[in-house]
Image 1: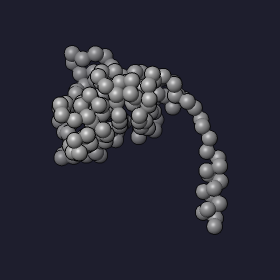
Image 2: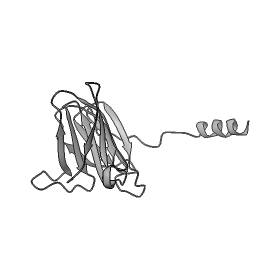
Image 3: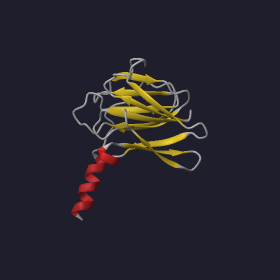
Image 4: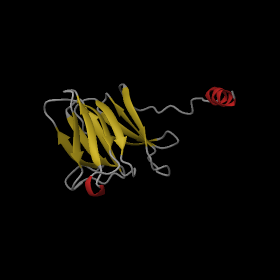
Length: 154
């Protein structure tokens, strides 16, 4: 009975804290940074082909663009240093949260793109560690497959 009372009290005390406004189309995913002291505390993915990084206070910090179609999912790496995004354009994009790009890329944190011409990427997630402690990216696709991607060299 005490647990039920505690739960009821908690539910009654839930309220909206903020609205994050900035996307021009449906927001399809949001993910919170596991690194609790990070400036970039949240990321959202949208049908407007972009990702947006947000502060804990709800301030828009940066917009990441490059996908050619709606972004269906996004995920922070376990250490909060990277993002991975999944799109209807059949690509996965890897980003550095701090904004440092790979050589020769625009200055938005973009590192690398992984393509699969035959299917949209519907969701993505980081593993906490693959072979030799290197994280893997797990992705689901519209062709009913789950694929694993290595981050060697990222």
